[in-house]
Length: 148
Image (cartoon, rainbow, N blue to C red; front, side):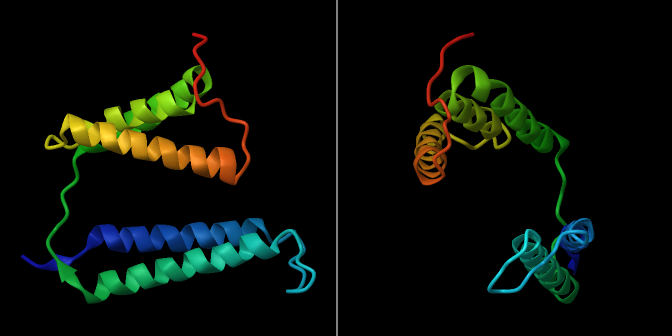
């Protein structure tokens, strides 16, 4: 049965709410002008963009019909567990082992994932993370740290 995509409606409403709440939180900061940007200029621009994405997602969800989306508590729990594992390990073992542990943990959410896919994905995400955070942003993250 085709019906309104409730998850997309909810997602659009959440994006709009986040944008509005963030914009309200920025009201005490000066915006400035395009030539002399104030501290609220860029965050407010991001609020507008996020709000527009939310409006677009909400409009698409209300105009298109699709199959109902199922929710799996096991999959959601596995993904949250992966984030928790990453948060616990990045300070103790470094970025690369934490990223590998994240990918391995989250891979259990899908029963069809093969070990070779897990390995390739963890290597690729580790490489992208190193390039982005270490070299692109210049963050001083330990890549490997073995003090337990």
